[in-house]
Amino acid sequence: MIAVCTKPCAWPPESLAFRPLARLKQLMVPATPQDTAHIPAAAPPQTQTHNALLAAVGARQDRDAFRTLFEYYAPRLKSYLLKNGAAEALAEEIVQNTFVTIWEKAAQYDPQKAAASTWIFTIARNRRIDTLRREKYVEVDSDNPALEHAATTDAPDDAYADTATIEKLRAAISALPEEQAKLLRMAFFEDKTHQAIADETRIPLGTVKSRLRLALEKLRGGFTPRKKTEESQ
Amino acid sequence: MIDHSLVEMMLMHYAAGHLRPTEALLVACHVALNPLARRKLEAFEAMGAKMICECPEEDAAPVSKDCFEKVMARIESPAPPAPAHTPMQQDAAIPPAVMKLLCGNCTERSIRWQKLQSGVEAVSLHVPAGSPCRHRLRLLRLSPHQQTPAHSHAGREVTLVLQGGFSDHTGSYRAGDLIVIDDKTFVHAPRAGADGCLCLMLTDAPLLFRRVRIWFFGFFKRV
Image (cartoon, rainbow over all chains, first blue to last red; front, side, top):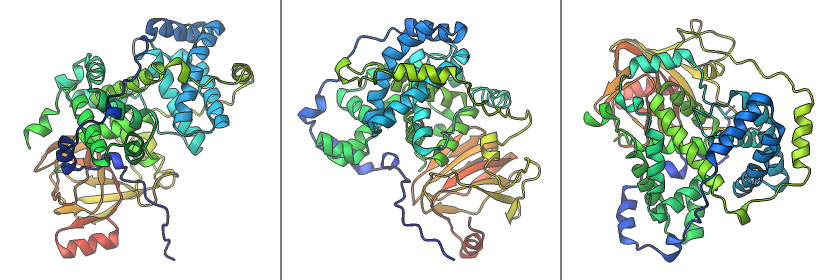
């Protein structure tokens, strides 16, 4: 029997497509006014406070700390989930799942490794996919001595020894021109396809793609280049 | 040409939670094997967290009043035991997440490799639910210094080197490297390094071999 697939194939995602012409077009299309709309810059989150609160939840199951985190993150996570297309009830369910997991895993949280906000975001992302797909998101196996060992002995690159990489990328993200930052935000945060972004911002599709591409290339500049592959090209 | 910024794109989409299970598997294994990739991913996740924290007060969606109580009620009720974490064997090259996709309960030694040609063996993996039906996952094993026939790609090919390494005219790649090829005109004939090469491959279209005889051969073997 021959099985015929009628589902549209989502691979490759639009975002991975390589369009050399798009860059040319991008140079020719002037920025539209919507382009430069300002992303409201909120006060920096109280990173230290949140880290301490989450550590307190992990160390002594501190309910007050947990409640404070819930009050700060629950509405924001829900907003993120709604923007990503979850219905009201589902968004609420995912928020609950997220916080149950935060409580259960808080003992594993290490403020030295990640900011509380990042840790909470990754849990919300994974629970979102688990809940939507009823299938576990493939998580990174972070405590894998064998892999660690293989990777460190095999890669004596100074690139990875550079502990400031995240800081560099953060700096690169905040230094992105407004129009690129805005598109990156839409693609990343709101899970919009490139076509949806193009429709909403009234920027031609090719420009959307090339701006995202430029943005990623700038972020890429935040890292030490992959010497071994680029030199040999 | 191999475009290396496609790897960053995949990391970004993994961080945002947009990837299909097959793609997420490759990225997760890549990140577990490659400390630099882990740092990049952490940075993209930090970007996601920053966006959530910067959400203006009026955009935040209030949760229902009893949401917190529901969470606490669930926390207090006895939780089902968490599935046991299967740590990887010290000498294993294949990550546990990939082993799970092999048919049957085989171990790394009992994998039934299918010989495609001398020195080239492959085994197909189960494709996790929720992935596009055209996705094919397989493990490919090359003997030391073995070269594969020259081929181009009808679709996208994402390769993660698990052990050993290979090189082609664009450069050499080693354990932990993720290579995304999305260029139908790109032809290469990778050659395994001195330790051979074990890799995990995701394709959405067959490879096109340059020599008709091999192409036929490959077609029937579904390479």
